[in-house]
Image (cartoon, rainbow, N blue to C red; front, side, top):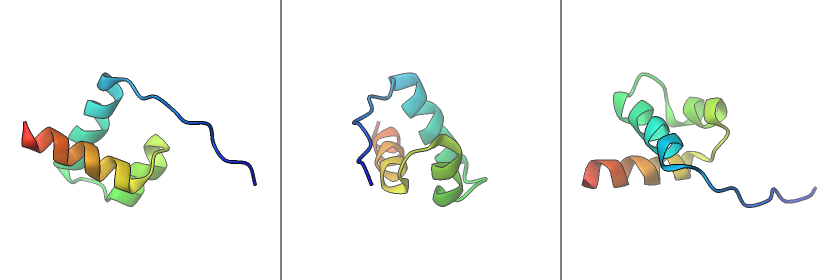
Length: 52
């Protein structure tokens, strides 16, 4: 199985995903499937958003 090429996400995309995670209407797993990113990446963006 080939590895995925490294992706660069825009700040707008990161904030959109992080805000969805902060709202808490869906689990990290559901958001990961919806936005096609790893749950750990969503958690990292969420933590960065909450730090300021």
